[in-house]
Amino acid sequence: MANDYDIVVIGAGVAGLNAAIAAARHGARTMIIDMLGAGGQVINVDCIDNFPGPAEGMSGFELGPMLQMQADEAGVEFALDTIATISRTETGFRIAGADLDLSAGAVIIAAGSVKRTLGIPGEAEFEGRGVSHCASCDGPLMRGRQVCIIGGGDSALDEALALVPHAARITVIHHGSRLTASAALQAKAQEAGNIEVRLNTVATAIRGEDGVSAVTVRDLSAGTESDIPCHGVFVYVGLAPNTAFLGSAVTLASDGRIVVDLDMQTSVPGIFAAGDIRSRSVAHLAASAGDGVTAAISAVRHLAAAGIGEPVKHHASAG
Ligand SMILES: Cc1cc2nc3c(=O)[nH]c(=O)nc-3n(C[C@H](O)[C@H](O)[C@H](O)COP(=O)(O)OP(=O)(O)OC[C@H]3O[C@@H](n4cnc5c(N)ncnc54)[C@H](O)[C@@H]3O)c2cc1C
Image (cartoon, rainbow, N blue to C red):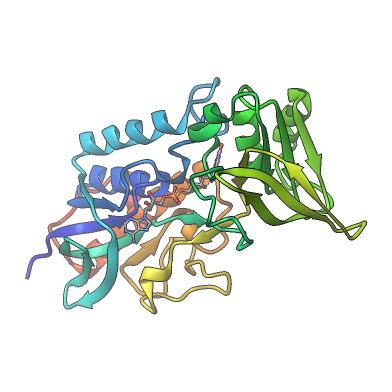
């Protein structure tokens, strides 16, 4: 029985979109599905200056639609749905969501990551009322105000820099003894003039009434607690892979990410993974794009070797 598609890609972030473009360009009938739309977690990022392309960089809301247009031109079909299960069939896989129920010869999982939460009092209560995960969305609301950023990696400093033109003062709260963000971002933060970094410090509660008025912090070196007055708290404390929907469909590493080989092949022949969701990903856009292309070419080769679906056009690199 013919499958609905040769390749179904789950997740339309940079990994999934690049996988879909490459798959379609190799002649595979390709469907990409996302629960939110195209672009992935970077969609609200103001300035991406480390993705190959224009030297001046671009925003996430330019990059997502640009890749979606390329996918469209390559013949990729796009659908909105949250995929809930992947199961085996005689000729490949069944991919089912709230609305869709499709079959495909191969699947590429590019479902990325979600932001971790702090799990401290006040965080859930003030979500959307001062607690945010998107500085470029909520930055203008913080004009002339004091804000806290929780986290010390690239995302935390990226977002602190997005707040620089809006907030009066930005306090970066980080539990470690040094920031883990790139040297380039740390230099920009230092130059900004309104960013202060508090190291060896953890947030223990977010306080307020109608909205946020302070973050309670513990200084791990001194063992003391104090309040930092602020109107906004932006949380960037790492990411968790979006693998919950997979159940035991593929083997996961101890960190919850999908185990793959160099071809982005998972433990199940015919299921590939790409981007942040795969084990040992360096969690960068350029690396995710590369993963997507590798996964697509591996999926095309898998289909050809297994004799599944229509014969696909071969690009030289697909061997
Ligand atoms: C604030 C921030 C700033 C960043 N800045 C940079 C930067 O400047 N440069 C850089 O290189 N990297 C940056 N990164 C990292 C970069 O965003 C990631 O490495 C990249 O987005 C990973 O792409 P991905 O396609 O693997 O996953 P994602 O971008 O996470 O995309 C996954 C997609 O899958 C969808 N999805 C998930 N589950 C399902 C499901 N069950 N069904 C259907 N769809 C599903 C999601 O809706 C999402 O659209 C930043 C990250 C953050 C959070």
